[in-house]
Length: 409
Image (tube, rainbow, N blue to C red; front, top):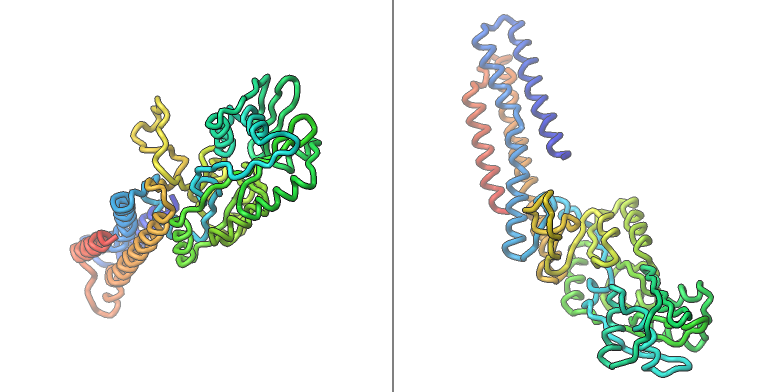
């Protein structure tokens, strides 16, 4: 929109310049046919045709190259220009930094058996869409644990699940949340949770009534491809920040393993949105890659939103824009599922914007060559006015040069 506004301003300026200078030369006594030629020459010389061509073709070529070579889909070609300006990448932990396939690494019961602890937790979280809770439920089913019948259940995103079993409250989630609800957690469990968190594992506390019955520790591997991608992004001067709902110890352990710059922990989905807004307020130009389950609001608050993986299915009956290939929530879709492709897109974007700068230089040189003789600067010193056909030919030459240069993107 800003670019289109600039084009309009230049067009209006060209018209005013042609009218104003034609009036000036008419006042000097030049014949009307010559004044008409002068007006047309100034208008043709000042029109921003090369400037208008400097950007769209190059961006379209860059977007096509990203889609063809790297299977990267963009919401619109202008994403290329925005990607070239990125200085910060914000990532979620689960499914972005890690593989997104959490598994139970340890069961630490207190006063009950491991099987009973797993069964209690699975009973409460059976209807949750949280990947960690799904892993707990799936493991309980695989191990054929007895699941109790729920009377009611309520999920608090970013904190945990509260369920009612036989008129007794059952809570599964963060230790801090359980303590806020008045649950007693023994010093032994808190110490064990810290030890597990230092290994990068996520600890889920399970409480029945007013007492914590144990901890379920979940782990998720960090792919070597992601670590390699983070190294390349660092070389491209991209700052890497992780936002997660995990504890500070778990988050710091993952940060060290993945070689990230910063981490913000113990965040709810709303807290993540505030962190994004704070980063933008400090002048960061950022993209965010997160989870569809809990990070859509935070991704929408970033300059660019990134979906890592195959395209989500388009909801049926979308009549507003049936041709769009994916929900417009995402600016960038990395279909391969690898963050490495983002660094490739940054390379493509920066090269494309370098070509756009060259195109703008060609447009500026064209104006510098055409405008002085068109305005009559040479006539002041006894030279001729620029003929309209010469202005048109020069503009056409500049347009061809810009188009050929744009094809390199």
